[in-house]
Length: 480
Ligand SMILES: [Fe+2]
Image (cartoon, rainbow, N blue to C red; front, side):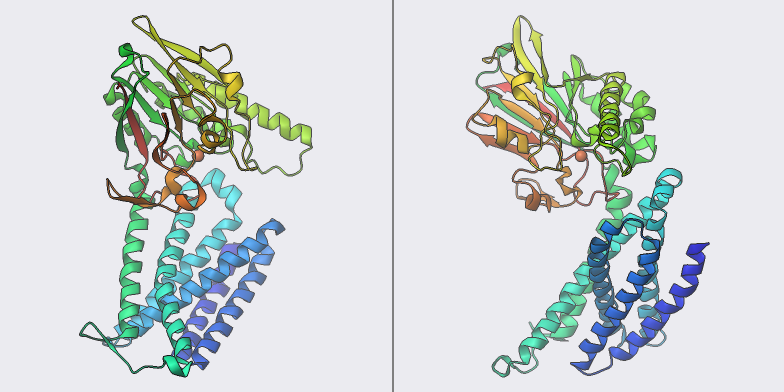
């Protein structure tokens, strides 16, 4: 009901805003920029007031204002771009195209904010709709931001021209019969379109596009008997994000089974918030087969750290978190994994031995549990053995493993490759994850020690994977 009432007011407001905008774009500079800024501020103020009534937690307001202001600026700039190009089209497309674009972008924008008001309820009853709203908003914002960058660039040039020395005559670009403004606007729109298409794919199909990456790793201290041993690493399942859509992960389980690995190593984050998220998935992961064994560890999300119960005493919080941690360990066992909680197993083959070590989560940031204890995990272990360590957060490797412990290979996850990036095998791989983590995906070596970071199978926050497919890693251990 509230949504309907809000739409009743918001739709004409959006339309009014658009018609005002149609006038403003015709104004001369600098009045155009001033008008545009005032309009953006009015919309922002309206939204803040509107959202002030519906937002539940006051501590989210600062973030809300930042997101909303950048969103409004991006949307208005992108409408400006569409309007600039469509202006030269025939009637009725010259006004219909920008109008439809405005209704679509502004509509999706409001749809997201109306949906967030019912976040808790939707997460419970209609999680797909919530995913659609989050995915749609994120796609829209990125697309508009790309277009906006080119418009902002033009404004920067315009400001630069105010300085007389920099003033130049109108130029054509590379012989194109196009002025710079049209060229930049069109480039922005084309890039925006590409971004939109990629995001749409990533939010729908891309997040289930399983990719098997293979690594053949040579170690001089690997016993001959273990030469050719295969490990499949999977990580960051985040089962709560899949909304009980069993098919894609069942397909992934079948893909992994075809590898016929000796060992399967799951490097944590089974769930997002509660251990109960994994309950219905037990029959799926029971089907996961390895010839010799399935091992697992806990990730930062497996400790119930991210629950939103504010009216708890410290004891109640500790009890709820302990329940979640114990629950996740139990779920892992029911799925056929051997959870390694700061402990190790000795793997034997034809009389030779290697060690499989697993630690609890240890993350550099204060946001993450620091329960991982390598000393405890390797207690009583023959340190000269070739050893594989499972540790969810790769920051643990730099802090406690490399140059400090006799661990030959460490398998981590956690970064998700930011669920976004661009990879041309053998040439380059870029991702926003590189800004957040020193080591964020693939293989790293320091001396004789190696770290492999899996890009994860599941997704969190953003319901998609854009240019960063969910990963299944096949590692072959070789002597040499
Ligand atoms: Fe994760």
